[in-house]
Length: 519
Ligand SMILES: Cc1cc2nc3c(=O)[nH]c(=O)nc-3n(C[C@H](O)[C@H](O)[C@H](O)COP(=O)(O)OP(=O)(O)OC[C@H]3O[C@@H](n4cnc5c(N)ncnc54)[C@H](O)[C@@H]3O)c2cc1C
Image 1 (cartoon, protein in one colour):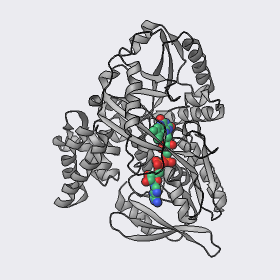
Image 2 (image 1 turned 90 degrees about the vertical axis):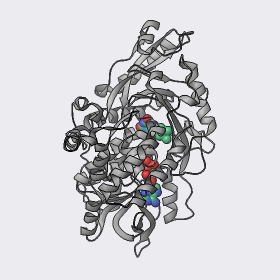
Image 3 (image 1 turned 60 degrees about the horizontal axis):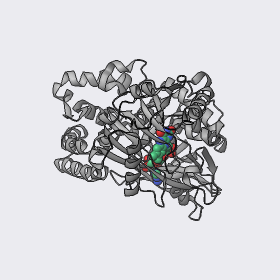
Image 4 (image 1 turned 180 degrees about the vertical axis):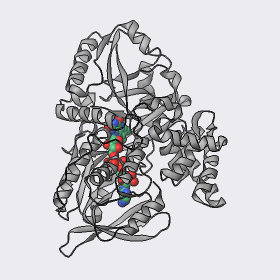
């Protein structure tokens, strides 16, 4: 998968596409896979990098959502638990189960959460990840050696799914490409075109690298731009009312010593009524999240001071060693594309279901939902889109589709396990040039071979693409990522045939972005 080959497909395509998808996050790329595997001709355009929006900034859970169970949204939980099970089958190299412990400090918590989490597992039916169980105080401490012991009575353990969001997305883009889709990153949709009757029949777009503009026509245009959905809808109708209530969530990342075992912590009720997680992730500890209504939707959202303080103070209630600002390796923020419902409802209470909306102009918008349910969202969306564009009816085939990288035993690849079936090819690069096998920084396991791989086969165009989304360096340890940037820029310059000035500019602009991830 590379950009020149994608442009080759774009130029070779004559006439209309069946579908054009705007947005290269989980929703858009999911739609591209679904459409391509049904045999439809699909073009996807992403203004920045794949996953630059919300889809690289999640809590990394493939879950039914214990919180939605508490809210009584049984159908959403059941749908998501089913999708969790299907995704484990689609991408076992990237999705795995994780034990979560709810620590109990009050007498009523063990029976209450014990029962709730039993129901959660029962709702998964044949897609269950393991039975929940009430733990004694000793068993809780065995699983969570760093938990605060004062007042601890015991805990409840249950099982859910975990993944690497941006890496799954890159593998999904490769899957769509292999199935015949054309996907371009760094191409922004700047306008929508109309047919003689005023219905939207295509897009105008601009390549951010070359400045070149082009038009493409399609039977249907799908707006899959998540929190940016209203912006694209207003390209069709400047007066359209907002559908999205954007809500920011942040995470803080610490080293592994804060959560040294294999178990995650789930706090079912924070002081603002949310769920908070502390989760082992790529040898670090990820803690989040918040739910803060925001007005604007920047491409690079920034954590607010009160959000940082909230996570630090909540974590301090549960961890024996209180985390401080100095312990934070990275802070990252994302914007939830929540769909507006009742006026005045808090964003924490807004629906996590997805919505498909067709404007008078024929523009189809799919938004809301969550990462876990991307496949089902795509299925619904392509069903609707095919009807709207009067495409021949074809069944969805993604339930049992192996995603690119599929490997049933990827753990054997060690640090390269997230690449699944691509891992041996990266090992070949290291064998051919042993210097590429060296870590780029002592704090993280990433090597030069992964940079070369990302530039050659995963459409990485900038240092940030490599350090934020092809590897997760920026999200794990922002200062280490800044130290790695010059070497990454040098390797990419050779791979992408760029100039010395490009190399220098890339390292500098990455450092500027990465400073937003440092406290
Ligand atoms: C803090 C947080 C934690 C979360 N945790 C979880 C979790 O643990 N599990 C889970 O299942 N879900 C989780 N979610 C939800 C999940 O991350 C989102 O539902 C999902 O990523 C949304 O994907 P999307 O593709 O709709 O949006 P995005 O990923 O934002 O993609 C939209 C894309 O559209 C592009 N775009 C915008 N305008 C244009 C244009 N004019 N032309 C071309 N491209 C354009 C943007 O650049 C962007 O890349 C979480 C969300 C947040 C915020």
